[in-house]
Length: 278
Image (tube, rainbow, N blue to C red; front, side, top):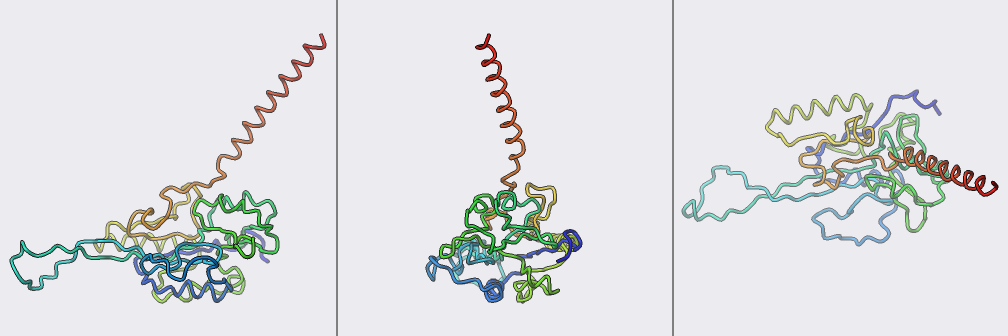
């Protein structure tokens, strides 16, 4: 294995503006990684065409289908009756997005894992080693995106590995390989960020002002994501937190305060003991 830092940081750029919701990425992920089907979810969730629901231990890629009412486009076609008598039926647009583990720069799941089961690879991605995971579940609430989950039938935590085994063999992840529209793009993170910025500029020039990037900024609350997105609406619409923050951010300050408090208590006890001896 190469020494950490010897490889450029690799990641995903998901351009949701060209996602067609085919779910080829979900299928490819399950097939390559041997991810089992959902254990407790029903076959049909009744939520539009999205029958996966969310990321989890058995869903490392999740394609969301978000249906929005939008005024129909006037194509100038002839109508029947007076214009003021025409029913105003809203049109519909689909926002589709393939979600995945963000492989955060500051990964709280790494911070809280007591066994070292979670580790950062030479590609700067975050992977769970199942043979070391003891199923404590500390990583589950630590993730600001709600990505990682314990598998009911197994007890251990599972999530996307960014196809670590494929990267080591010089191959791209299965989901990116299977995507027919290049909505999921894999490569060196710095190059992907440049490509994403150019794409947003192009969409703005084409009259799509709502296009924006999510998770690309190294200055955000998690230090930037290794998997970031181009969105066509607010992050909350896609189920993303608007301002994610690494959940272990305040631990050093908390430990410092605890140490200061403990020292104060110890000093008070010493003074009290010495006072009694007099």
